[in-house]
Length: 242
Image 1 (cartoon, one colour):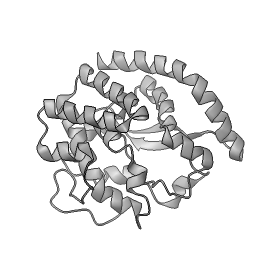
Image 2: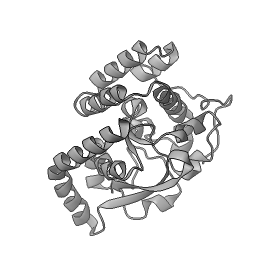
Image 3: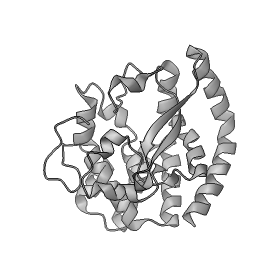
Image 4: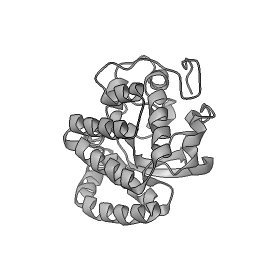
């Protein structure tokens, strides 16, 4: 059922998104006369590598800088890229990866190999399902760029402030996965484009209904500053880069 839902909704999504995608693709090409696409190597289900298609929001060869995490103040982001990231348009082309079977509409976000090499045994459970375009964590941390803004080392900050909670939320999704939950998260993702506060309240209500612990609900509500924490299954806070 999940795979059928992925195929049908991704096909519809690509058709509906084309009036937006086509002019944005032209603007990305026009600003520097390079491809509007960025093909990002990622690790998928079963630790198999795949090539994730995104709209390019950064300068050419930005991935060769050695920094994987991106803050909103990152100078590698182009002017058009700021708009693309603000409205998550770079995620829409990943519907192609859903059609191919590399990804699902809903599931833990795929990561780069350098990051998955650092996974704890508990985090490796995230690689047991197809990665997704969205999930609980995608909504809760839709402001990831702002969280990492002006951090001295965005990768270390990501590992301490975001990765632990993304992992917990991803594992919670896997434990409660269903096609009805997928539809709910797709709906909340759409709501987040217009009202992040309403989407966060929807996430908290859903987590609460499914018995999420208080500490997970507190993070999902995003009403307090994030504090460094160890990744799921670890006892120490990460202090090194990938």
